[in-house]
Amino acid sequence: MSIIISPQFSPLVSSVGGLFIGLAAAMMLLLLGRIAGVSGIVAGLLSGIRQGDAWRLAFVGGLLASGWIFSLLHPLPSIQMAVSPPWLILAGLLVGFGTRLGSGCTSGHGVCGISRGSVRSIVATLCFMGSGLVTVFIVRHVFH
Image 1 (cartoon, rainbow, N blue to C red):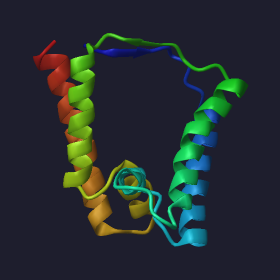
Image 2 (cartoon, rainbow, N blue to C red):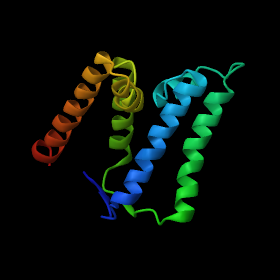
Image 3 (cartoon, helix red, strand yellow):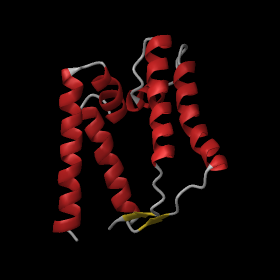
């Protein structure tokens, strides 16, 4: 029950990716006055597209397009899924539940909230990270 990704880590590519994430978050805040919290942006679209949601569509479109553009410039790592679809569905549902419980996701709290010095976001991110550590330990050492 593991996801295997080829070891193609590159500090340069990772740093450029982080730079783009930070730049996008800063632009959202400075130009639109909005937090780049992906779960909130997507939830807003899923609740029905309303007038004034063009920025949400552009943001999500940019997320999707960036992966495709990156794949044209740099080979993507090969991914082998050693997990059955029901486990993936359960994991996705648990992540969705966690973002609702935590009033946001790692992009909203971890990237935008921490950079603004939000105590609530720091606590939420520590909870995300702690939950992830416990989950990995349980999946790798208890269930495996």
